[in-house]
Image 1 (cartoon, helix red, strand yellow):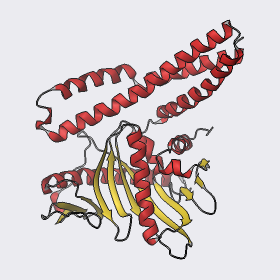
Image 2: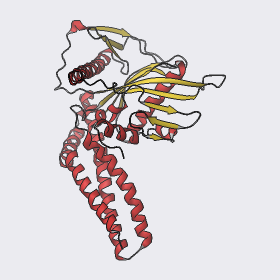
Image 3: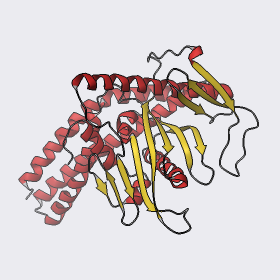
Image 4: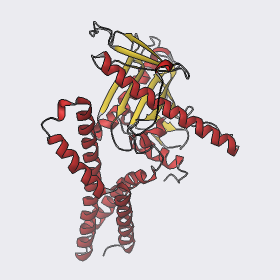
Length: 369
């Protein structure tokens, strides 16, 4: 017979999925997908390349989100049927299979449920991720590139479009910095918990004596602005520098000054972009990044002021928030949530959902399972 406990757990899981469906707005998502598909089918779509990229990127992201929900919903329905049949036929083997599948489905539902915790002002936005190498020399630059690959692999596995705006390569290996966008709904809310200082401990592949090296990289995550956001920057507050785009050793470099660096003089905020061949396009992309960073800066100042008014003297969010240890043992551990795993290579290959979920629950004050 079916375990009464399993029946109760299945009903609870179905109720959770119904709540998730309401929060995600599945009917509205279907409607937006249909509208975007019409736009994609228009013969003049690519007359405006920027809009075409926005439309196709948004469509791809929404289709991925819908597929994730629909697939999980179907699995839950199949599990309910399997459980019912196993109970009717008193099939212990099928019931054991149902229990195992329940555990897998429950884990997937809990992961999807995390989305319902993203209710911040900018959580639904796409994300701009900025990675900078810190202390540790060439190992830090290599670590920064490892983190960039980790986040882009995470996005690619979910079919989220990634747009690289700027990459500054280090001389020997790795990168000094990189700025890229992940075009997906709730990318900012999901990845914002990654902001802070990341630490790597390993035997350095760049040390002839094979010594252990500790290196650091900083991750910054800001929301992508929409046209309705009011961020007005007077021209006199911006210094514009142009230079030749470059790549790592051996790659060709542009023969024109197409790369653009913008400096916001009042705050000292500097952004650059060199992904396009046109200086005009690079300047437009750099302005998008600059406005996003200034919006995040404004938000941070407002939050700091509120904390000051509340008398909150807790340590600031994100300082040395995660350690990646490859020697003398294998462990990735978040120092805020205490979530950890020994599967270090899987993490660097983009398997970071456990850390994201734990971080979001921790930030919202929820209990980490």
